Length: 263
Ligand code: PEP
Ligand code: MN
Image (cartoon, rainbow, N blue to C red; front, side, top):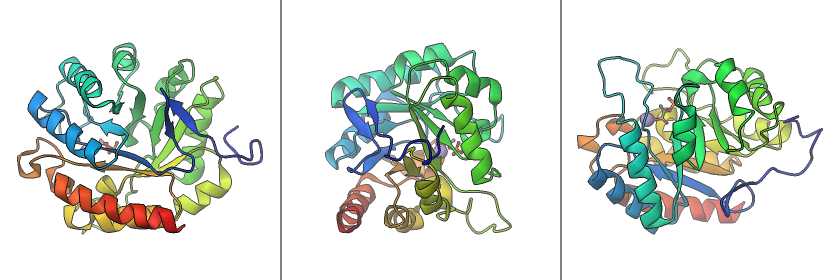
């Protein structure tokens, strides 16, 4: 169902009047985790100013270590709703399990399925039964075929609002957090009608190089980017090492708009 052979034209997801996919570059930005009202609102106003239409921010965080910050849960969801009210940005936030899905879906405009959950088939089946846009991240060791089949789990149950997010895969390389697989972008654009979003932040994991990979993703034909931005990256409770400052994000947006306009 997600194949171009079944549907030729690009899927554009209507997120309450804001397009996800389609001709205008989709820009999602914000902190890795929601940490406080001050932090979230500062990030939201900063990314809104530069033209993002979606605010990202984790409330339930799938951390590799159980001893690390796990997210503020519902308190974070309430702050995301407040930021949406203040800025008009649409909220993208991760849902980790079926138990918290009704609560997260109440607050979110787009449900992010994290890399670690791409093959959580009971969660995917459930997502197929609701009417909410889904941002399906690629599993760290998933092939493109496996990823498309994960999308198929959702779409085959009736929820056609799925976007794919390339966030890097695990390779032998250790100098970068992941290896952003930009091969996937033109391949997916040929294979599927679903929107393709690139996450350069998790893809490379190094603030100094996030902008280069975001530009490369747009040049490769991605429909949009999702970027971690924090008002004070050095103080971040998660992923500070890959979060851009608002000024760095402004500069990146200026660059990607030139590239998006040229292709
Ligand atoms: C995130 O977006 O902060 C995140 C946890 O991403 P991923 O699931 O791609 O690791
Ligand atoms: Mn993160």
